[in-house]
Image (cartoon, rainbow, N blue to C red; front, side, top):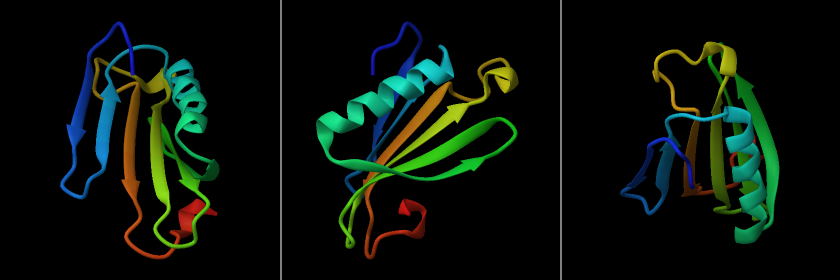
Length: 104
């Protein structure tokens, strides 16, 4: 992820990773992340959960057992205040068992 603001990346113990972009236009960052998904697999849009300050969307590969999951948490522009929430947070992991229900 390239950005003019700070980007943080962390490897997770289960082999997944997490990355966040602290500043920038959340919608454009989200669109760029979704466009990159096609380069790395056949991801299908799953469930979106909205909160006051952000929305989270799951993108999953098609396997019924242990699909790859990319969760994109996009800040609501109107609720970004003083860097309290990254503009975009990305979590990538493989589901541990059967296809999660948020991968509809």
